[in-house]
Image 1: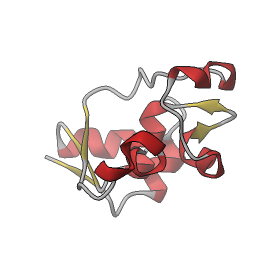
Image 2: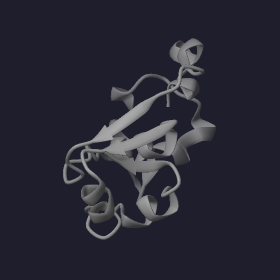
Image 3: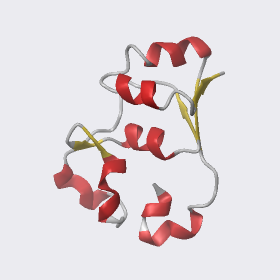
Length: 99
């Protein structure tokens, strides 16, 4: 999401890796709390949104260059049990790997 935040755009070309240890806590918050995050390009709201709320974990999965999990079996588990993100992990399967 850095490349969509105005004050951090200069960091947007740096490749990022997100490692997921526990998908149960996703940091969800209502859109009324968007003032807590850096000023970002409003046209890119879909990168932050998941089921009508801001979801930092979903945003990380959407924006990271690569997503890893703590194990291959956990990666598979996320496709079936990830507290509402199952469809996202299914869609991003080419970008997610378990170690």
